[in-house]
Structure formats: structure tokens, C-alpha cells
Length: 217
Length: 75
Image (cartoon, rainbow over all chains, first blue to last red; front, top):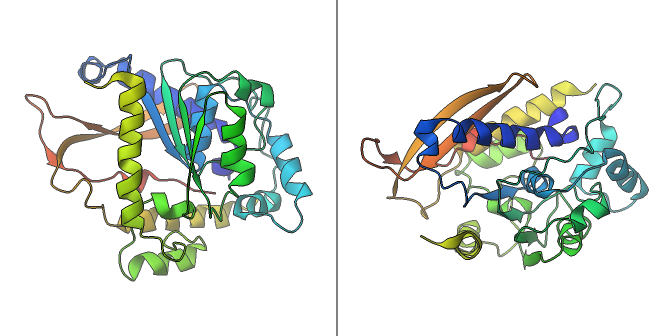
């Protein structure tokens, strides 16, 4: 459960892992510390916002979800069923900004309503919010678009795809079967969406963004 | 606490993604890969980190495969 409630653990994890890699001469030799970028999808996108300086209030997010009656997305429906009594959130609103990361590209991200507005306004790193217009997990307007509109200078790219169009294609039969059991539409794409084609569009956009903002070789 | 349903969902999500097929966008490219099992003693959290890198002299090469098994619960 902490995977979707204590989201800020992810920010700590990324910073810790980055530190470990940079402190190891074997790996550090392969990394230009001045050109570190971040790419994340879904909660990974949330983590990017956090690492860029977004501070989070899980109570604010929960209140938002509670107020939605008819149009709760998958995420809001899920967390409102969680028993949060044993989940500590005292450290949630800390800043997890990691200045080593210079640019951010996030996709189908959220939850976005728990970020403290002032903290989003303080983000100055180059930022692209890639929005899945048909996002069935994290409703796009309240999540990706809301994030993009609050981060100064962020650019929003909206695609006519669902939440999982960014993840790998599924093998015939196996993927849909597991999806059905898991109860998540991992392999479902909106009508007319070719997931492989989406990947062919997103990948060069990501590369171009980092080449522009981190400097190409 | 409803831990079991989430754990089951996460497991299935991981299994599914692990079974997915890497796209052709990277097929044929060679990249170096390494998996680091890290532990943050301050938080007690274990972190599996997948590294991809441009092979330099002395490094082996392997087919480029996405670190699908590392994908956690999505929502």
C-alpha cells in the first residue's frame, strides 16, 4: 500500500540510488554529472515533480478525491478504499528536490492535486508534461494538466492515448490474461491507438528535449 | 489494512510487464546493462537499480532489454 500512499519514498529512493551510482568510481566515470535528466511515467512522473521541488500534502490529495462524486478516476477510487491509519505521513511535505537533476520529462503523471501550489511555482528546471488525453487511471485535467499549468515554463504535450500507452506492448494472450486478473487495463489502448507508434513518437521527443536542455554531445 | 489485494495487484502488474515484448525501437542496439541491489540503511528500503550505459572498452555488451521487472504498482 505504501507504494501509492507514501509516494515520497520514491523520491528518496531515486536520490539515494543516484548518490550511490555517482559515488562509485566505476559508474561515475560513465556519467556526466552536469547532464542528468529525469524521465518518469505515472507515479514516476509524480516522483519527477517531487524531485524538481514539488512538496506534497497527501491530505490535500485525499480531500480532492473525496469531493469527487461522479468522476473519480482509478487512483482516487483506490486510495479512498485504503486504510491509512497505519501509514505515517509526517515527512510527506518535506522538500525532496534534487539539484543534481537538471531537466524533467514526465508522462501520464499524478496524483497532482496534493502538491502545494507554492512549491510548484518555485520549480525552475526545464519541464515537459506529456499528458495522456484519455488517461483512465489519473484523470488528465486534474493531474497532468494541473501540474503543467502550475510549473512556470513547463510545456504540456497532449496525446490522444490512454494511461498505459507509454508502457511496453503486451504479448498476445499472456498480457491481456494477466491484465484481467490484475484488474488494471495494462494492455488496453483507446480505439485507433497504436502503442508501438506512440513509442515511436514519444522516444524522439524525449531525446530532443534532453539534447536541447542538457546539451547534446 | 488491505495489503494483500495491492500486493497481488503489484505482483500481477510486474508479471505482466515482465512478459511484455520490448519494442523494435531499440532492437539491434547494444547497450551495457547492470543491476544494482542497493539498500538505504537510513530508511531500510531496498532499491533495485537497473543501469544502461554505452559500452566502453572492457565492458560487455548485451541486447537492449527494458527493465520491465522493476516496474512497481502503477496506481
